[in-house]
Length: 317
Image 1 (cartoon, rainbow, N blue to C red):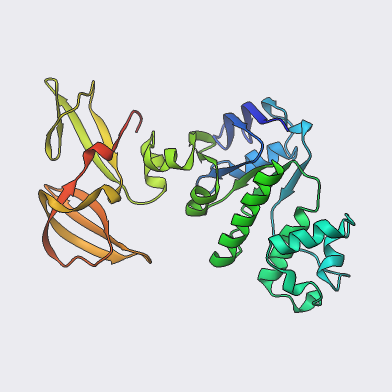
Image 2: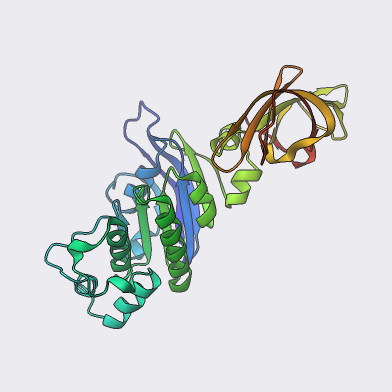
């Protein structure tokens, strides 16, 4: 199967407003999952509507019409008239072997003889997804489809979907507000703001090599340090750095790269548990600094080690 190509795709709901999509370019190979990320109104759903031919008066080029496309907005199946899962799965495709294989893949073989009215919501969601793969689709478009699934089930079904997509060499685009899941399960991602592409790349590119401040801050707290060019020397809040910059800029550093050490003495502002670790806030010469730790840090002063070599120097703010 060929790649999905999108070249300079543009659409504006109103020429006087920025809402819509401007000059989107993507190349998605078979067997890949691409996430569309961004705040509400950034253009994620608009992209999926354009690709699903729900919006036709756009400019730009795409070969989407050469594919069999299936668009999904909700993972809620209609089980009316179907008393057993196998009857539901084979409604439009009577391949019973494929149906049994999908029941196994989605880990719901235990419900094969159960009346659908006795299925839990999680079992119904998995059964709906299994039926989705009974269809002969080449591209799947998911619009915020997984937000209604509880965390544990979501991790399971996304793992299963990724395996099937790679096995069948299908292509997936999914819009989501679940940034952590997108980074975990996608091969590539696009971050949008006001209909424009802020950055596209691998999840690691977006997370650790942001090109803009918006991208850097989208995935959680980051440290931002102003670097100044003073007579050929690069000056940071922590003193002179052994690197050369042509003009003043902003260095972005993830909290993971600041640890208890022996570089600077900082005041503890707060140490708050975020569900898996503590997010610590410090101040140093009026500069706010974030770091993570497994243990709560008490009020007072601590000495920190700041690894600026792990930071990204932004070309755009």
